[in-house]
Image 1 (tube, one colour):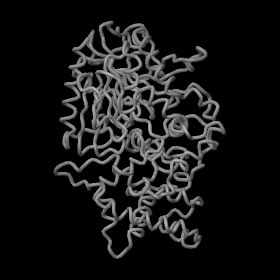
Image 2 (cartoon, rainbow, N blue to C red):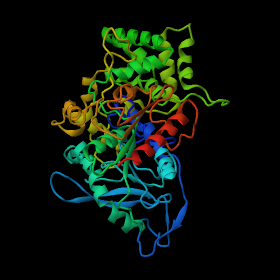
Image 3 (tube, rainbow, N blue to C red):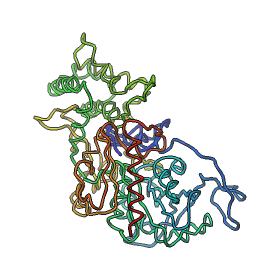
Image 4 (cartoon, helix red, strand yellow):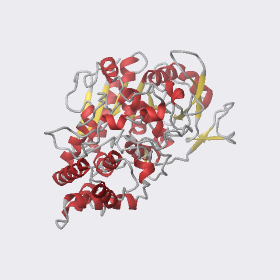
Length: 506
């Protein structure tokens, strides 16, 4: 869920898939995470078809004789569960191929990314459904993908994007699922079927909180890399990145020199280094400083060691290789690395890293804009520079205040960017949620594990905690990840055992 890239730009890569196009510019503190996660969600396809039950009409145009596993269905969801009863169309995908009457129903709310049918035939939720005779349902989160309750994404129109509404979406769907599934694919959900909420990253947080809030509806939950502690000033992120990079001391040295240059206010010297980093088009010096975290954060958050026998390079070794040039000072090595990253990925620095880029673009289908609103109003999650004496790999100019500053430009003067995170921590328990029958899974290489249940399990008699020391963000969950080494195979085996144990309980 969430790598921080200073502003919004390349959007849609932490949320899920590999091989994406860049989205509209927007404030992108978290967009890097969004980029990768979305690419994972979008990878994979399944064109398998099965017979359509007689008398059932499907939304996909021209599909009157057979339905595809990729067919979307549209559920009438309530726009505001705490106000009017008007509805909008929420996108749903269903796979009942493995379903045995009385088997579990796995519900995956796709979180900060468009819902992808790739997860109907790949990824851990599908594996669980296949192993337990379950049905798999993917629900698209409001304001993402194609599930919009509004006509544009202006500030006032974002008011229905709240955690409370998102959780009620899950509960309202489950309460009405029997009729909806029967009416769309002609399959009866047995009253004996138990519901299991699943998710990765932010959607895993939703799974945990939905299990806590609706224990009568949701029997168990599987949460991969769930940040359940809502942290507005997330300096701990850098500490994990520093532990993962053998060249951390060189990076810290480069950042220290850069901060001295920025402190000098010497325009000639500052502009010289902006050009060296290929960031000369960024006018704001803080935007320049913030842009330097992109590559390091992404490398660590989505790190997977090369498979045995593979010729693939180790991404961490590759990044740190830039700092082996002893003829240069570390700052020059960092500049060379960043310039190559921008050049090789064809990044437009202004749209990618300028704080106010895209602020007045209110068009729909901007998943990064929706996520930025959630961080501005409820989460924070601002990945800031650790304060002395802690080592930092990002500039001291990268503060939570700087990252939240564009919130008002994007969403209006009433959105300060200083969310009441204590409300959510008090309501759901932070790192010690009062829940049962939840499988918490984390890779300890993942910076977001600092905000997850990864070290101390609140109640080991009622929950299960699984950690992978060499793994990072959501690797057990991805549809695109077929790796079985570095602890992933053991984790998946333990996840299945835990879910089977929970399903056997009443």
